[in-house]
Length: 238
Image (cartoon, rainbow, N blue to C red; front, side, top):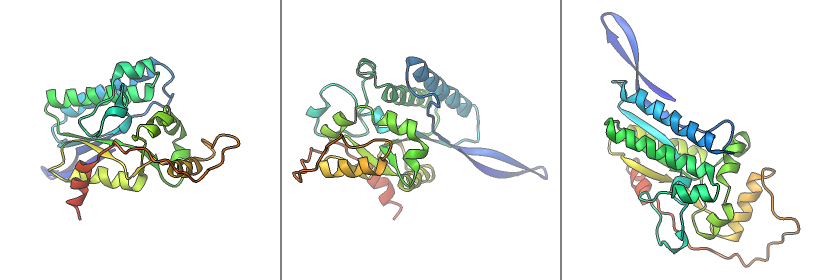
């Protein structure tokens, strides 16, 4: 998505691009390393084009929490925030290709942004929810959920409402103080009750195991994700 601004020049109107919202997902899924490489190459092409466009003053890059939560022994970490990155080798070994694509593409974007002095902000979103969102975007939803049991038990399974996510993107574009990465979620799924509600909201994409009955014990896992930086950004808008 592009933001356009209008200029008057020698009696004629000219439209220039002043900003870019960059969001890439493989339409073919993430079944092999080729899809990962294509997404990374796409990001590189976008960043190079933006670096050569003088009118662009900011890129808001849509990334994923999966670019930050996959590595060995994450269960031993007390806090997982914007300083955290997924380990590409771990993702390859566990065949977490969606997470691998998001990690490598965001890292490539940041490397080029710093090298070419492009003003960029990234939004690392949790699993996107909202009326019909998951069903209209079912491939990405299912790829995000690969390893869901481990995310749940490690306290890093998080969701974000689509409308909230859109508002965060706009805020990140408009606020001149916005910088770096922002973890974007407004619900952490770390209890059995919350997990059941999530599964029900995503039906029929996913379903509870046959014969499953909620016993009411509602085990709660420790939350590890932190979004204090995002709270400061959106708090400044109130």
